Amino acid sequence: METISINTSQNVDLDYEAAGVGYRLLATILDFIFIMVYVGIILLCLGISGSNSSNFMEDNRYMIMGLMILLSIPVILYHFLSETFLNGQSLGKKVVGIKVVKLDGTQPGISSYMLRSLLRIIDINLLNGLVAIICIPVSEKSQRLGDMAAGTTVIKLGSKVSLRDTILYQQVSNYKIVFDQVALLSDKDVGIIKEILDHGIANNETDNFKVLAQKVKTKMGVSTPMNDETFLKTILLDYSHYQFEK
Image (cartoon, rainbow, N blue to C red; front, side):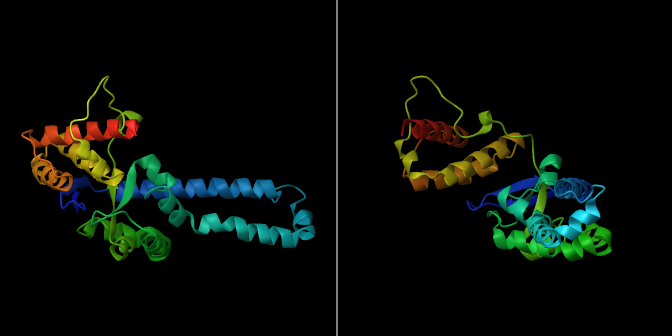
C-alpha cells in the first residue's frame, strides 16, 4: 500500500493511501458508463433511435444539430465539471471512493481541474489509457501527467462521512463553552482541526496534535493545562455550541 504525505496549511503532515491504477481504472470505466447512459437517454428523447429517425432528422436537422451541440457540452466537459462541482470527484470516483487532492494541502481550483481534464487527451484517450497506466505506478506520488501538471494526485477516502461525523453533531445539555475565544476561529480553521484530529486518532499518529494545539492556542490567545488531544476536542465541542447559540 503506497501512502502520500500531504502538508496542510497548518504545516501538519497527513498520510493518505494512494488510489492505485485499479481504483482509478474502475472509476474511469464507471464514468464512461454514466456518460453512455446520458447519451442514450438524449438520443431516445430526440427520437433518433426510432423507426422514423431518418425522416425526423431530415425535417428537423437544424434543431437537431443545435441540440446535439448543446447537449454534447456536458460530455466533453464531464470530468472538469464533475470534479469542480463535486469537490474533486466524478460520479465514478464517488462510487469507488477516491478523490483528487492537491499535494500542497490546499483545495484544488478550477485551473487544476482544467489541466487534469485537458491532459486526459494524452493520459487516457491516447493509446487507450496506456500513458496513465504507466505513469501512475512509476511516479513518486501516484500521478498521471495531468496530475503532475496540476500538482494533484488521487487518494482513497475512508468510510463515508455521516452527519454525526461533522463538527456540529455533539450537543450536550446545559453545556457551558470553555473557550469563548472560539469565536475567533473560522469554519475552515475548525474543519482543519477536525480533519487532523480524526486522522491522528484513526491512524494512531498523535505527534501532530502538539503543533496544531499550539497554533490554535496562539490564534485564540489562550493558555490551558489540558493535554493537546483534550484541548482540540474541547475546541470542536465549544465551536459546535457556539454556532448553535449564535
